[in-house]
Image 1 (tube, rainbow, N blue to C red):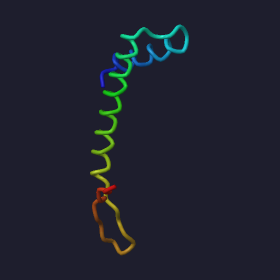
Image 2: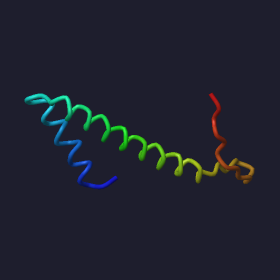
Image 3: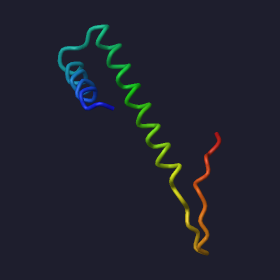
Image 4: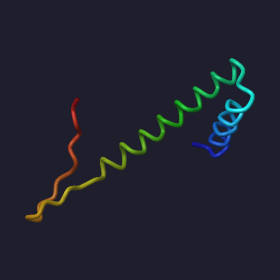
Length: 68
């Protein structure tokens, strides 16, 4: 995510705590937060796909996707 978008998220959070947000700012904040979380989840998914478990006997296996 672009640094300016993260700065905007923080700016809106500070404004929300002090004077409150307008309806359009609330929508903007929600959209920015969703975008941030979606990118974070995708990054975490990529990290987990690269994880390899090494057992005491030396064998290695990729981390399996958990099905809920």
